[in-house]
Amino acid sequence: MVFLTQKIFTTYSLTNETNLIFTNKEIVIILLSIVLFRYFLYANEKHNKSVLNKLKKSNQDIIESKERYDIVAKATSDTIWDWKIDDDAFIWNKGIQGVFGYKKEDVGKNSNWWFERIHPEDSLKMSVRLYSFLDYKTDKWQDEYRFQCADGSYKYVIDKGFLVKDDKGKIIRMIGAIQDVTKQKEEEQRLRLLETVITKSNDAVMICGIKLNENSLPSIVFVNSAFEDMTGYKTSEAIGMPLDIIFGAKSDSKQIDLLKQKIKEYQICDIETVCYKKDNTLFWINFTMIPVTNKDGEHSHWISVQRDVTELKEKEKEREQLIRELTKNNNDLKQFSYITSHNLRAPLSNLTGLLNLIDDIPIENPDLKELIDGFSTSTHLLNETINDLVKVIIIKDNPAIEKERILIKDIFENVFNQLNFLINLHKPILKIELSEEYISNINKSYLESIFLNLMTNSIKYRSATNQLKITITSKVINEELVISFKDNGIGIDMGRNKDKIFGLYQRFHNHPDSKGLGLYLVKSQVESMGGNISVESKLGKGTTFTLNFKNI
Image: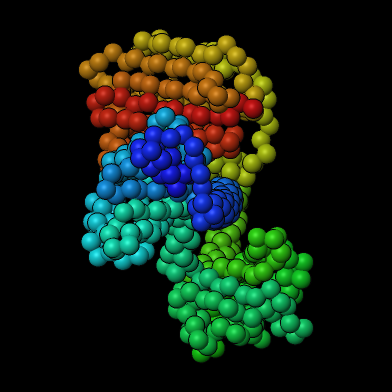
């Protein structure tokens, strides 16, 4: 085309003629030009096809690579990030939404959004390590920190990063993967706590294999320091040895057989037996074996916890011996009480009869009369003491007393009638608030005796300066009958007499009629009905007795 154009231009410009005549040489040149031009077109088309195929293959590789990347990201649950450092542009994959709960529109596009969500306690050290890594330009970076979720909570993560450099070695990008390790971290902390409990426990802890040998128990694979202290065996001596090393001739064979049977059945076992230390010293242990399973539910180990109960066993023996001695002494005292109360009554009755006969005989000798009067007084006091002792024995020796359903108000009316003379004489202010409900499991005679004693005490130990006030209440609270006796009498010094108030023949005032038996009888009668009694008192302020009975 160039040659033809040149030919036309030359012909027109020189001759001004329109006839174009080509020589053979020119025709050859034109044909060669056409051939060369076609060849170049063909070569260029072939090259373009090759480039296009490469581009298609490269594009397919990119698509497949992205698919693999997405699949791997889902499989590992990692959160992938891409940081273009110069532009401070951040790209996150979908893990930031699935793992941490952020919406797509809430995810930031720069590094500030990332750093702002690192826990304040971890942020500074993590930043220092990251930028130190960037300064040294090493290829790989890894750190552990807490990353904030969309709901404000934090998850433990491990973050791994890799640098991307250009041809000149300049860092242009950093690509990383954040892995959620919260569960592993919590499990690690739990295991650390368990390890602390085991290693620091005062109880011996032992881990054994699962295999039960034919003639021995499973082999030991771990012991804590408490086991060393308890048995005298060092860890190196115990590991690999059968559990039998702590048992011996005096160990309870039935307990050992039970242990073996439970191990064969993979069941929890708890035994108590004598064991042997390394130096053959005997000691008692409470021995527990617990089977442990692996993640597949298969039995893999036994955990044994042993507690030295030697001191407890010795105390049990001492307590049993003390109980035997107390039981014997109690029986002896009871027998003595029977002898005193029954065998002395006949001689006392004879003495009382003789004294009654002497009363009818006139005695002129004053010395003899004084002697007989003194003897008579002593005899009557001894008789009263024996009668009091009989009352106590009747209460103490009759635990299965008859109980019935009664109305407290009726009991009090009987007591009021019996004390009518004293009440009219001293004219106390009475405030009575008694429950109208029927009360079960009460012995009528005992309750009447209790009321009589407490009412009599209130009148007997009244204040000389204030008018006597007595408040008696009863009510049922949570299936329990509560009776209260309150007065404003002279009171009791609780600091000196708190532990003596209900004792036998304990006296707190120099009253001529006080024998120190009434409150003892009250407490005995209350307890025989399954109740309890308490007292509050202040000198010069009065006394309150509170009785509690189960109303079931």
